[in-house]
Amino acid sequence: MNSEKYQELIDKHKPKERRAKNALIAFIVGGIMGIIGQFLIDAYSNLFSISNSDAAVFMIMTLVFIACLFTAFGFFDNWVAFAKCGLIIPITGFAHSMTSSGMEYRKEGPIYGVGSNVFKLAGSVIFYGVVSAWTFGMIRLLIMGG
Image 1: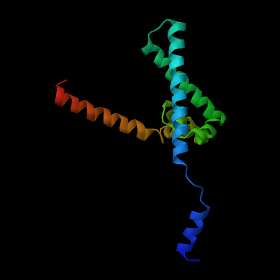
Image 2 (image 1 turned 180 degrees about the vertical axis):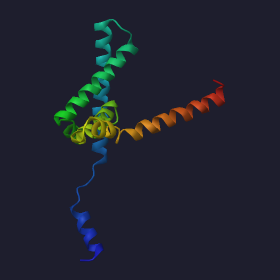
Image 3 (image 1 turned 135 degrees about the horizontal axis):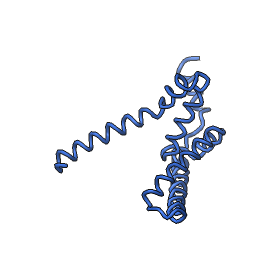
Image 4 (image 1 turned 90 degrees about the vertical axis):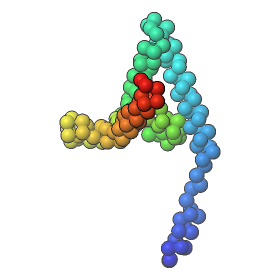
């Protein structure tokens, strides 16, 4: 079988990608995550009589904890398979990547295993976030003078 016929056979049996459906699901799930986040901010703000900015910190901690817990129990991967970027792009995806990397290397010990590999997937996000913040901060400094 030549490579053209083989590629034809692969294309024939490959599942079709449903981009519109995936985008709609990600949009809805991301919106639900936003609603949950706002609910947590309002609940923490009213329950503890704190400002919204302080309540937002507790909301982020709650979502990170839940994402880490669900990753440890094996639920999060199944939800991501359904929700796609609706769960990966928010802070929950960052927590999931760190937890899954740490769990994968836990047999190598807390230092050489978990500690050195926990940022394996999320390290690039942190790096480019810091570089972008520095770059835009310098641009703002040069344009606006501080």
